[in-house]
Length: 271
Length: 300
Image (cartoon, rainbow over all chains, first blue to last red; front, side):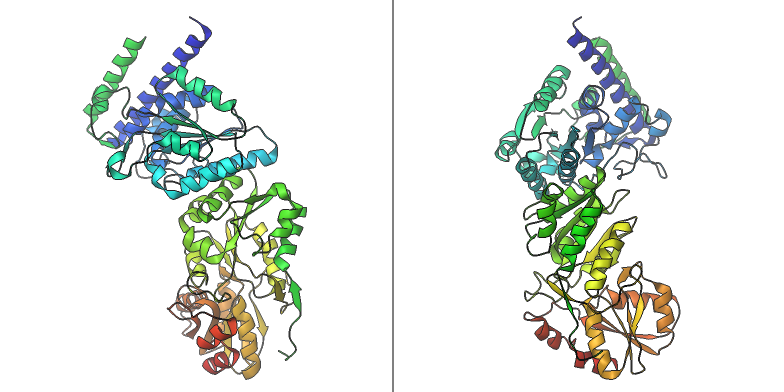
């Protein structure tokens, strides 16, 4: 196995572990943002275990996708699985959409459309300090309907923030239905290019493609980068992938148990 | 108060901001295309690396301020009151007021100090900011307090909303430690409680009827002890503010009086529950019964 293939395999195992944690978190209360957690697992694995350094920042604008971050932070030893299984329960600090100050969450996301502005502020802050710290901001496609995102995009390119990477979770669904039906946001890369970004689509379920895209972003000077991630909601659990409404899942324990079996079967097949 | 016009101080906010910038290298100032109109330009010229031009985008500016706070800076976002609050309320709340990081918002053109009507007159900003959990709300009366308010805001543990006064600002009050709620005039003719520019108006009126004036520069957290001690002395107090009578000083004093069971009647003067008219400050004050003679008559 080549060194690259070895890294890919290790990160795929990490992504699998993150997906298992996502399902176990939802199983605790019988509900949660399973679709996002599963679809972002590969991105989380690459981001947290390949890309991020100590002085870099993750800005989760899509607060509802916190489940994926919590699961990644479990892999980093920040949270115990036992605590994560209290996800969304009364009195738990493992909130479905946490506020700033919850370990691992640098901003209050979840009031959608605001994260990129804060990411711009952090990227400026790192630059003023003379640091090479980088900022990775996760937004969803639905969020792009908020005008503030474009104010922030304008500012990011105006200030030439090449230490900023925008990660668009292009899952194509939002609260009222398909994004294309609610309020079309495509073509996302072309819009971001027009706003001054180096933007491209990526398959976020391909570890090598993600790593290459991050490397390209790192070598892009003078302007911010954007990776438009064509995520598959529920990725890794075939019965979830086939479902139309996997954004937020409410289901009895046996559904989550079955999902875990499906997930493990897929992982065994991959190996 | 004597008939002699008070001395004017040129751009006290600009001076205070530059001094703060010299003292602290973690202060970053943000503007949304109004640096020339909010006395920010001297800071921007002396500290270009610590000045962030955001363009005409206040929501984004609040977010950028929040991001700077999270990387260890003390952000000071400066714009007009209407745009800092109505335009960017959720952004200000989420980026600067959910903590633990924090920032300072400085808001110019308070109340009726602009000839444009609803678009520019920030007559509801104090109410909106008072409603935010953990927000400190300051309405300085003069140049002395505006300067002190910058130092006060810098030292607070949480977010601060500070009303700014631009250009030549009168100096009415002596320097004091911090921003104390204090009786700035004694008198037996009436009892006035005021904040911000309302204190200038209250002092003018008080000279006509020999009224006592309690000045309240910090609306939240309000100095309930000082306000209650003053109110206990009177059957009626009249509040004077450069703001709507909904949710500002009149409301804050009423809350103190009611929760303390004091029984004092609170007569609230300010912009009534309606958009204020257009025109010069003198004209608008007369229209709203906030000129010195009207306040004196309504308070007596």
